[in-house]
View: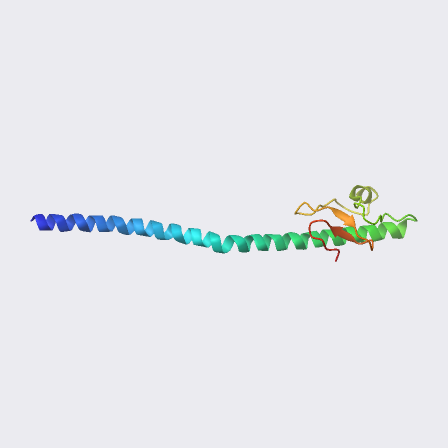
Length: 122
């Protein structure tokens, strides 16, 4: 009888441990998923921000070309910041959009719009 009681107590402990093992297994799985997928998420987000910045630079470049075609004085000042307010005020930009990663739009030595964060003028 005491063996039966002992066996029943051990069996109850094992069932409790299985639930504990399941919880630990799930926690390890969640942590591993975070370590595997979070860097990929950051890379994806950075790529999307880069594409958005490139599209914004292209719209600004078109606005600058339209401005220069309609005015005798060019707005391009090599090495200086692009005056987005002036372009919007004169109607060459519909809205002022900034780099999603807080870069600043400037003119390079060839007069193209570049981002100080993405370092690209294409």
